Length: 376
Image (cartoon, rainbow, N blue to C red; front, side):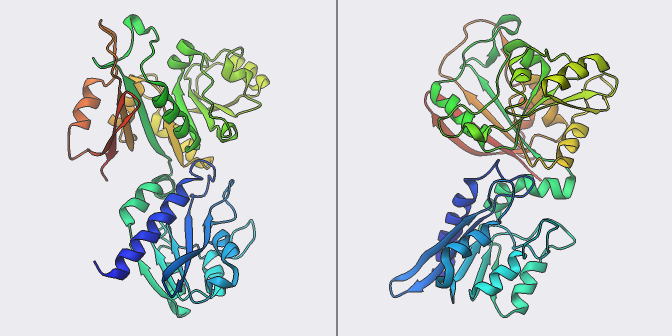
């Protein structure tokens, strides 16, 4: 690795960290981080930072150039995704034009646009304008950060992160499914941060009926980052008096039901402010998960955080739809037979290096977190 390679990785890592701050807030667009540097006698310094703004615009590059102003002249742009090269129906010039007009002489881009029809076009236009363009810097990290955007563009569905908590002896619930406290307070704080960094949180109706959850972000200052709450509810059993339905006008609730579900409960939920959508049911009578996720993709959702329980987690993995799986293990044991958190098929898949890789392990409070990433 040359000195320049090390410098490029340093500033790209900063761009990735900056881009991560708005994950969950920019859908249907990706949260792109951008850093502008300029040379000084003591080396390059940052003169502009940008990240895609809530709602998807302005883009990160535009924000970084606005902060840098004339200091961008002759400098370098570090960006986590290839600058856009097409004009949007929402107006504004594309990031390629912003970049050329800024006066930077060099662009370092982590990855190409996932759209196969325009992949590489932004880089080519920048080169044709005389700029030096370096690509692929920290590409693996950028691919993971932008996986939701990539999957929505290439497969029509959002990425899914499935999270399950278990006791030291492997249980997610008590005998007969009775709720139990599994995670430490620090681990629950991590869960709320993940909610804030995803576009939607998804649960099955069984978990909702058992716990009557709110599924909002309850971290002071981040309450407005509560994601869309998506409930998989084949037969429309969500009670209009549930906490979800009662707060649907404050934080959106989308219920995905089977095409054959009765109309009467839909009318009651809609009257409460819940949006009801329908997809076909699978052969087992449950919702077709792939169809449900494709539906979310059409609505612009790119990142889904699923706290849906052991059965849904296993079904997502078996269908090839669980892109990241987080298993947290408490220091506490249940001490009796309960609901197994990681069901046999999911355990087998997580143990297969061809299907999932263990990306990282960390200790949060008293809980050990294992992060698995699906290969391919």
